[in-house]
Amino acid sequence: MCGILGLLLHSPTQDAAVEICEGLSLLQHRGQDACGVVTCAKGRFYQCKANGMVRDVFDKKAVSKLIGSMGIGHVRYPTAGSSAHSEAQPFYVNSPYGIVFAHNGNLTNTQDLKRFLDFEAHRHINTESDSELLLNIFANNLQKTGKFRINEEDIFTAIKDLMIECKGGYACVAMLAGFGIIAFRDPCGIRPVGMAVRHTNDGGNDYLFSSESVVADAAGFTEWDDVKAGEAIIITRTSVSRRTLVPNKTFAPDIFEWVYFARPDSVLDGVSVYRSRMAMGDLLAEEVRRVLDMKNIEVDVVIPVSTSQRWKHSAYSNRQVPDTSRVAALNLAQKLNLPYREGFVKNRYVDRTFIMPGQQMRRKNVRRKLNAMALEFSGKSVLIVDDSIVRGTTSKEIIQMAKDVGAVKVIFASCAPPIRYSNVYGIDMPSRNELIAYHRNPSQIAEALGADLVIYQTLPDLVRSVQQFNPKLEAFDCSVFTGEYVTGDIDEKYLEWVEASRSEKARLSAPVTEPSSSITIPRPNGHSNGLGGGLTAAMKQLAMEEEEEAMKRREAMVGCSGPMNGADDIVGLHNTFKVGSM
Ligand SMILES: O=P(O)(O)OC[C@H]1O[C@H](OP(=O)(O)OP(=O)(O)O)[C@H](O)[C@@H]1O
Ligand SMILES: NC(=O)CC[C@H](N)C(=O)O
Ligand SMILES: [Mg+2]
Image (cartoon, rainbow, N blue to C red; front, top):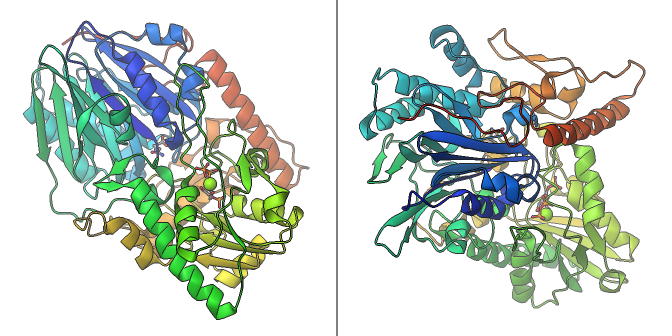
C-alpha cells in the first residue's frame, strides 16, 4: 500500500508541484519510507525523490524546481525489494517517448517478468522493485507499436497487454512526456485509485488521480469517480478517454483498506471509510456482548488504542493519522451502553508503526507513541478496541501498559478477524510465522498477548460493515483472513518463496533463490551487512536494522547512494533531468 497521485492543470502556465506535494502529504499514511514527484513542462521531466516523509523531502526550494502544469507523485511503503533510495518512485524510462510511473500494489509473477524483460525484451532492470518491472512491461508494449507518435488507442492496447502479462495487485499512475497522464487498476481492482475534476474560471478543467478521495476534497475537486477494475483512463490537455480493458474478472478490492489503510474521510469504491468503521464497531459490539455474556465478564470502560490529533508541522499542514480504532470503539461503546474513555494518549510526532520497516523499530515506536493514563485504567476491567491485530506488536505493548497502570482485567477486541495468512498484493505481511494468530486460537492469542480475553470481529460481519454501503461490491480480497487469493494463481510454493525472501528472518540469512529460477534475491540495499560471525540472531537483527536506518538517513541526505533507476544522476537530491519533447 503506497499513495499515488497525478495532476493535470488546464492552464499550461501554472505549476502543478505545490498541489501534488500537498496531495501527497494527505496520502502520507499510506507510505512513510520515501516519496517523489515528477513534473513535465514543454516535454521535459523534472524530478525530486528521496527517502523520507513529504514534509522533509519537499522544501520550498525543491518544489520551486518542479516546473510544469502536469505531474505525478508517490509515497512509498515497500513491499518488494528494499527501502533503498533507488527504489523510491516515480520510476523513469527514456524510451519510448519518456515515461514516468508510480505504483501501489505488488506483483506476484516478478520472476517471469524479469526473465521476459531480460531474455526477450532486452531491457535492463536495475533494482529489485516490482514497480520497475511494471513500468518496463508498459514501455515495452508501447515500443511494440513502432510509432514515432502514439495515440490513446496505442496506450489502451499497451495497458491491456500489461494487464494480461502482470499478475497481482496494482493501481498505477503514469505520465508520458508532452502527452498527458494515465491511471489504471488491475483486473480485480485490489488497490484503489480514482479521478476527480475541478472546473476552472476560464471554462476549462483540471484533472486529478489519487489513491484516496480525501485529496480531491481538500483541493476543491469534485465528481470523484473510482477507476474501475481493469480500466484505464488517459487525460490529455484536450481529451479524457476511459476504457475497461479486461472486463471478466471479479471486482474484489482489498477489505483491509477500510479496516486500516485509508483515511476515515475518504470514500473508496462508493463506501465511506468512516461509515464502514462505525459499522465495524456496531457489529463488533454484538460479538463482544455475546462473548462477555457467555463468559460472565463485566466491563467498566471502553478504550480505543489511540487519540485523535491534527497538527501543523510543516508547509503541508492538516496531516491527520487515521487513528482507525477510535471511530469503531465509540460506536461499540454506545451500543453496549458503556463509558468511552481516551485512556491512551498518542505522541503526535511518532508515525504509523505497522508500516515501519523492521520489528525492532515497530516495537520501540509503540512505546514512544502511546502513553496510558492511570486514572482511566486503575482498578478497572477495560475493553481495549483496535482496528486489527497483525504481529501483535501494538496490542502486546499496550496490554502490558494497561496492566502496569493498574487495570485489573484487560479484554482486547479487534475490528478485523484473526490475520493468519500472508498478503501478496501490497501489504508487507510476507510471513505467516510472524502473525500472532498463525496456528493459534483466540485463547492462545490472548495468552501470547498477555490479555485476559481477545474478541475478534467475524469475517461475515466485517464484510457486512463495508458491503452494506454499496451492495454492488460483491467480493473483497480477504486473503489475510482466509488464505484465499482473489487472483487465483497463488500457490504454496509462491507463499513459501515470499516468506523465505521477505520475512524478518530472511534478512539474517543467505540470499534466496526464486522458485524455478536461477536469479538470486540480494539482501536489502544490495550490500553485505558487514557483521561478524559471533553475534546472536537477535543482535544481528538489531544491528541490521540500525544499519538500514543509518543507510536510509545517509541516502536521504545525499540523494542517491544506491543503484540508479533510470532517472537518477549523481547531482544529488533535487536532480532535474531532461528528455526530448514529443
Ligand atoms: O499487531 P500489529 O503488528 O502491531 O499491527 C496492528 C496495529 O498497527 C496499526 O497501527 P499503526 O500504529 O500503524 O497506525 P495508527 O496510528 O493508524 O493506528 C493498526 O492500527 C494496529 O494498531
Ligand atoms: N506498498 C506498495 O504499494 C509498494 C509498491 C511497490 N511494490 C514497492 O515496493 O515499491
Ligand atoms: Mg493502530
